[in-house]
Figure 1: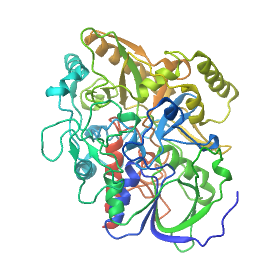
Figure 2: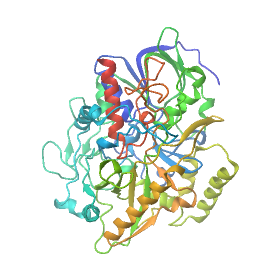
Figure 3: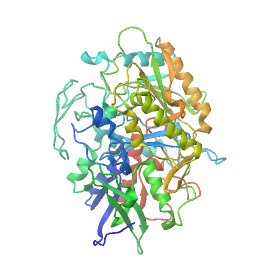
Length: 555
């Protein structure tokens, strides 16, 4: 690896990543006058720039070694797949907008009797004021079920009523989507006024157009994503947001602070391996890692020699947040309206044994189209493209059988999609909940590995499939498993753990405030810090945790 000899710059705070942890931390530090630099490997996506055509979508994956610097970062491990995001705003660009608080009794304190236990050193009461602060900043609203043009989403009411008939609670969850602007009644296409801190993109936004494209990136600006909220506010306060910057190394400095090594990606389709790019450096007094569960854990594992005192818990307690994808088909009557609403409009909550249930708790949510779930159907060849699927399937099976290092498969998926002809006809069901965080992450040959997941959670997933089957029957349809079970049982979009919080260095990598044990000024502010599944959609909990972290440092 080559290094440039440019003079190293220094700043108060470096934040790695711009997702729910990084964006919140950037704003909180910048608003107090700290000099903040945010290093984000992906690019900015203003309204109107998200891929829609077949050729754009096929190239919209992250794999620099194949010249791809797109939005979706698809990972393949031995027993599961994962989909995360690469761009200014992180996962908020492609998530389904849900901002649910973690259930109070799901902040568990299991006895440390095995790899799969979890113990949260914080409580719901610790996070509640920070939940409220994030909800206010993100301007959460609920889907206006039953009002005028919103009635077309028939699935919203059907799933809610099916859940209630089975004895569960169901609701329209809080969403970071603008349906109503400026105090007016909900109306698609109404202009959204900029907040006092402005908008870093400088483009107009309008209220939700009910197109179901949330998971592909909202071209209308209707989603209250982090670039429109926290990052715009941080930039207004002076934060330096640098896209195409990927961090590679972390080194403690004599006398305090950290040296951060990074590379700068050059876009334009040229295939350049990240490791071959020249590394530059920046120093800081405080370093906040918020590159997502995979990114942050990989950085810490890769730089473990420079952090010899870090906890042995590094890489432990990986969880997919219990994510399970299924499909509902054959519901009689009028259209479900899956293309005429946000991706998620209803959440059915199944209680945990800790709060009145009979087993581990979970949530089942509806999913609109188009969304990444439908792309996964396309990728397995349900709508054609057999030759592409055979080739891609062969590559993935070969990796399994030869125990080759897992790798980012954005390039493979891009080729597999081919022309991107849309699959049709299914309404996905999205499940998540309290799986067992028994996964162990490591780095081998500079590739991230995850082992021991999801084997211990098989009974949990079996039960969730039965709940989905019951819901489908109540709605008059049939449940079908995710077709990707040909290769793996689980696809997660909510990876968690790897640098878990704990009561001390023997039980966690970071404390309940996100600071790494033994390394003052080094923090983890993203999903890697979660010691187990959040249960509900984890974005709000990660953001609240980051807000609490920053408040502690600034107090």
